[in-house]
Length: 394
Figure 1 (cartoon, helix red, strand yellow):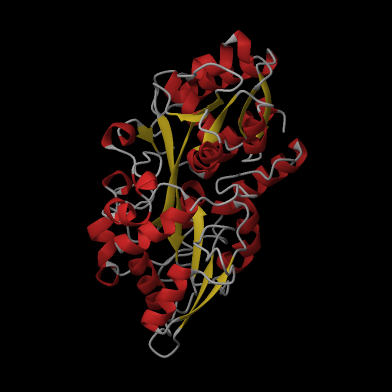
Figure 2: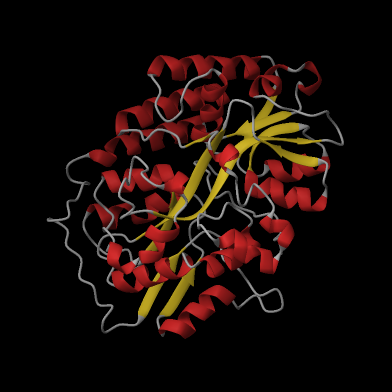
C-alpha cells in the first residue's frame, strides 16, 4: 500500500523557513552541545531498568512512519501484534517532526541526566551521532537483539558513530539522489546536469539538509562524503554557489518539493527516495535517479535514551521489527529502504511490485554507490552548517 505524501521530512535539519539569524543562533547552541556540563558518561549517568516488573514502553517516532490499518487508522497492525505477542503495552507518539526541534525538546533533561519519559526515540544518523557523542544514549544488550545481528543489511554495519551496532539500530533507511518529471523535461543522469543544464534553469530545487545536498556535490567532484577535507567541502560549496547565483536553483526545500515536482512546477531536484516512490506510483514519468557519481544513504535510528526505564522492553521491540516478515509489513506501508535482510522475500507475499523496487530493496550495485556522510565534531558541524546556510540564503 502506498501512503499519501508525508507532510514532514524525516531528514530535515530545517522546517523550511528559518531565518539566517535563527540558524546562526541554532549554530551557537550546537557549539555548546559538547560542553562538559552537557556531556554524560555511562558511569556518571546510570539508568535503572524496570522492564521485569513494568510491561510498558514509550515509543517516540516521526509522523506516518508506522503501518496503519487503512480501514481503521487507530490501528497499527505490526505494533498491535507486538503488544499481543509480548504483553508489553506501547504508548506510541508521533512527536518527532524535525531532528533539531526534537533535540531542543529533550536536551535539558539529557544534559542533566534526567528522564525524557521516552524509552525509544528515532533520529537521523547525524543527530544520532551527536547524541552518542554527548553520552546521552544507553548501550543495548546484543543477546537481547539477535535478529539485528542476523538480519541487519551489511551496508549498515560498522557505521562510524556506532561500529558495534549497540546504540543506534536503523528503523528505516533511504537515499538522497536526483529526481525529475519526464512530463516537462528529458532524462537526467548527473549532478552537474542538474546544476548547469540550460533547459533546467530556474526549474530546480535542492535540499535544505546540508548532508544530502553537499554529499551529492562532493561525490560529483570525485570526493568521498564519508571522508573529506575542508578544502574539498569548499570546492563543492563553490559549485553550489554558482548554481544559486546563476538562478539555476530556484530554492532549497524540505520534502515540500514533492508536490511541485508532481505538478511539473519544478522539472528536477535533489530529493529523497521514499517521496519519489510515492510520486512514481501516481505518475510513472516521475523518476528517481541514482547519479553516476553516487547517492547518499541515510538511516533513522532507534535509540534508548539515558534514564529510560524500560530498556529490555525496548530491546524486545527492536528485535521484533528485525523479523523479516514484520519488517516487510512495515516497509510495504512506509516505502523507504528496508534495513532487514530477508524482508524482500517476505514482501513478495504482500506486494511483488514493491518487492522488486530497488529503492526499497536496493541491489549491491546501488548500495556500492551509496555513502553515509562523515560524522562531524561540534566545530565542524557549526562551520559547515554556517557556510551552507550562507550559500542557500536561508
